[in-house]
Image 1 (spheres, rainbow, N blue to C red):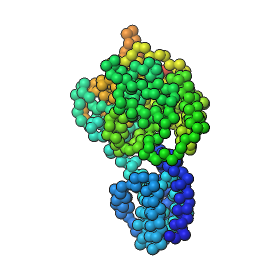
Image 2: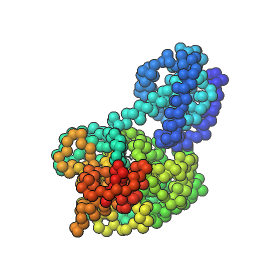
Image 3: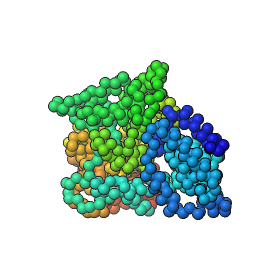
Length: 556
Ligand SMILES: C[S@+](CC[C@H](N)C(=O)[O-])C[C@H]1O[C@@H](n2cnc3c(N)ncnc32)[C@H](O)[C@@H]1O
């Protein structure tokens, strides 16, 4: 073993032993940290630039074509990963030693050396850290090949997502809409892959996360996991826990899924992660358990005060990311189906856009404190801005689950109107039983003349997308986010204004659907001073006063 190998192993080895308990956080970061991905992309640019400058290094790297590297990456990906932490460590050390030996044999061995270093990188808990170590200790041309491999891997994951997602059985695909100069609207839309008859189910989708309304959770009338109403004939299984958050389940699979995905992590003193992530060596201390109990109680008190659904969903999302042990279980009861097996929950959510939200200042410290006492170090990965961004994603992608047109007894929200937690539902959030997030349906835009509608015909949070009319292959799909029906005594104009106000204040967009545009064209126009720039959010905030600007003119 050369002295350089020794230094890599010493530096990295210390980290390995010292941070076994952190492995899961680093993996979490690798999967979720946009900064890390940015860093890699930035690094790629730097590498490209310096490659051009350094003829010697360029000669070494350019001899290996991208096709060769892609082929090598494919082979690397087919190698089974070492199954246990112990084997990972041995594998890491042997790959580093092998890489170092190959590197010492000269240019002809640069590629195999880089492959060994890349293998070591894949199993190392903190990739950015190891890349730093490589940059200080491994010959430059080899590091460049390693970084190119990292980039190719990231690139293939990013590019391939919309090729394999949504899965074929959904009959839809996600397409980018060319930006229109005079209208706002979603950048990506769901498009039908085949003709569908009116009334037919386009697809069915299990949610990736749910949150039952708090009053129903307390009443114990609905399943905390799938939101099904618990019939007297069904066995309900109250979940006993060390923390005071009542949950009721309609079946054993729902109970097991809920417990393993988020309940143990957030609201019990049980080990927060499944045994397979091998943190069993971290023995909780009595003081640690007390701290966990106190942090849970504080978060529960905060959630209960205003019955905050989005914060609860965010906490569940964080827990579910960490507790996911494999990409799919094939068991629809844990709603993994929404992940499509290829991508994990965070891969979906990472692609969603966020919107403006203003959580109370005490919220972030409470969530961060809970993470800190549950898995020390984890709080570093939820910064205040990322907390807001995540909450914004949840807020603007949440669906209301309503059975049979909804209920009439939902308690009114105690939140200020500007903080109200809205959900997409044509029946109205005030009629829902709970909130759910979906990886495919989240791409459905709003229309006041929608060609599809969500239904929960199975009596659970499973969303069935139903065609409102005969639809042709290639049509863009839409649903109503709000109640769009014209009420008794309401004029067409009043109905339009009500819808648009609701969309503007709640969803922060000025609706550009065909129905709104059509009515606008039929209404008399008044001239107002043109605005500098079309900003849908700013425009939306003023929608009750004036219509969104269309080439300097507004309709009333
Ligand atoms: C379906 S897209 C969201 C897709 C994806 N989940 C994401 O987060 O990027 C929803 C967003 O598109 C825009 N949008 C939807 N319907 C619209 C409409 N009728 N007019 C204008 N903008 C619309 C709004 O900004 C809304 O928040």
